[in-house]
Length: 385
Ligand SMILES: [Fe+2]
Image 1 (cartoon, helix red, strand yellow):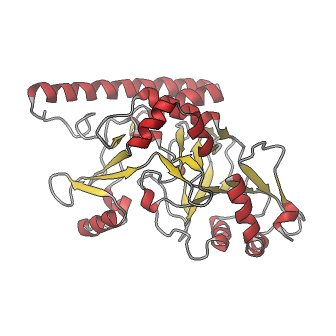
Image 2 (image 1 turned 60 degrees about the horizontal axis):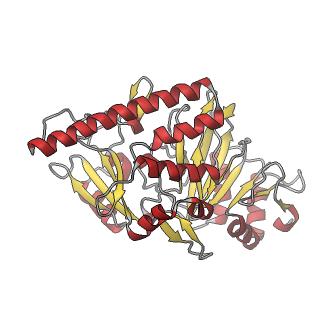
């Protein structure tokens, strides 16, 4: 059995960016069969992956995260990540497998390439495995970042060529609530992830070493061991390391205050449900409140030249997630709108089926998550270099 026999572009998923592989013989569809298939046809699989950008392995009989891990290891025997260095809330399931970001089912996750904000440790490939498909929605649209670049306005591209973006993330010493749209969880705000959870160490000097080794700048607020700000610099336009194609690097709108509210607008136009309208209203309301208080805080500081002693959760006092250009200028909400619009224009959306494995070239194909209904949507993930 070779990939050439069973590889095809499915008519049900009409996209040049997604190749589908199904077992040609239903008798050979176990996870062991799939591992053998990958081992014997890996060159062909790589060729197809670099041709399409994404490959979906469908109708193989994978039953658990452990089965999925074996499949991922058969393609990346020595370079499958054992540590996730990002700040997203997720749970480790096996040595190399994590849950996807634990975000409320009604919330959208805007498109991005994984860890685009930390280029030095960005995985080259990302796997998804569907343990349990959602009852409704919950798709993982995939986005062609080469086409996104072509659809962005020239003025924004010029600006992005001249200036890198700086992403900053605040991790607290203790779990803490912030009035921050990114932590919004009906009816209130969930607690932020602490720095020892993010970096899997409670030793400030180890965290410092880990950050510096991966090109991150760190700043302890008050003293080492207290709250921590980590900054990274990343280009918005890159050359694909294998194909040489120039692609949009996968800017993550969630770092921008307006990213979630703008994403919810596109989600509502796509899903057209009452719930999506309500979520859209709430996200815009919270974003406007957060923006208003942040402006008041900044104006006060500018006029009176002294910091106001406000509670730590107050917007503007400490910013949990932020992105700006390296010269300190900000990215406007309109520019974020244009980027998200280009993401949606170049998205391929398909419904998950139980047992699906999706492999993405993370330097070329972005991904997002649509809100879903039903009690369960179990998607796991793994990262390859
Ligand atoms: Fe992601």
